[in-house]
Figure 1 (cartoon, one colour):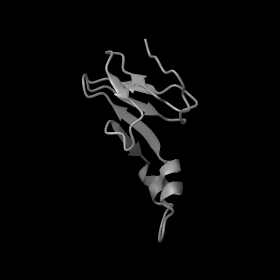
Figure 2 (spheres, rainbow, N blue to C red):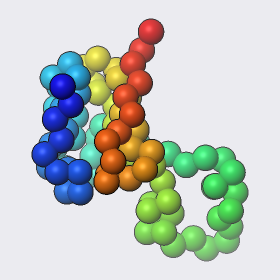
Figure 3 (cartoon, rainbow, N blue to C red):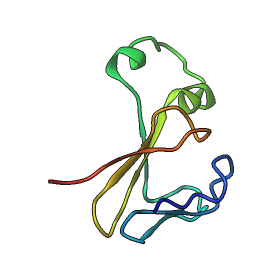
Figure 4 (tube, helix red, strand yellow):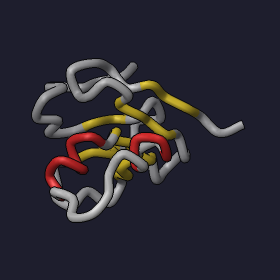
Length: 85
């Protein structure tokens, strides 16, 4: 069962396998930031790093089982889990 104590502050996040994959550290070693190539193409010249960061999707990689968790719609909604075949 997915256990997320707070979707806004995200103090901890546990994978389906039980591994803790988000623990509040910054920078977060299990987090990757994603952006589509089309959206990336809308940026040019000098870019505000904070604006770019806010436009990216958060992906968490479980170091134990390799599952990928993506917050497609921000931390206000549950992430989608993708497992390896």
